[in-house]
Length: 203
Image (cartoon, rainbow, N blue to C red; front, side, top):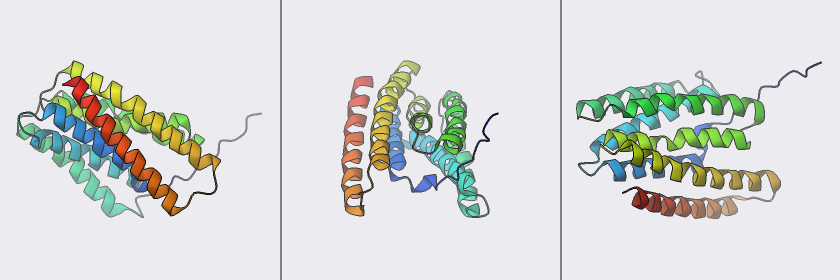
């Protein structure tokens, strides 16, 4: 007889500082790679992805609690890409945006069943976060090859760092704010440094 699955209440994803660090590094990577003619288009695409993240976070914790965040995120999700297209963005970024739904929805499904710190959840969530890099790069005129290589460089490293941190959180009960702050600053520095390396390789 099968045991019933227990749905897990999700914490607020928008409070995951590490996810935001990885998002901004990925968005910056896409802007640097695809923004040689101006960063307005990549930044607008990045704002659309940020809006989608806020929408997902609001849905995860419940619309009755985060209705304003949902509305603001939805507005960004629509306005950002629309503005980019009006400025002449390469519409191929929409392919990446659409494909991002798969890991994003997969991450939510996995988080509810395996927990937000499980490896499978982190791999899927990181893929959804890092997707802003190739999308922004494509919108700004980068080639598919460069965009794919950028994703291939960022996703494994960011996933590895996220899994490493989650293992520490699960295996230690002695973390305090100071330790978390030091760890967060170190991870942010690593993410920023690797972002620069990835853009250099793809350029």
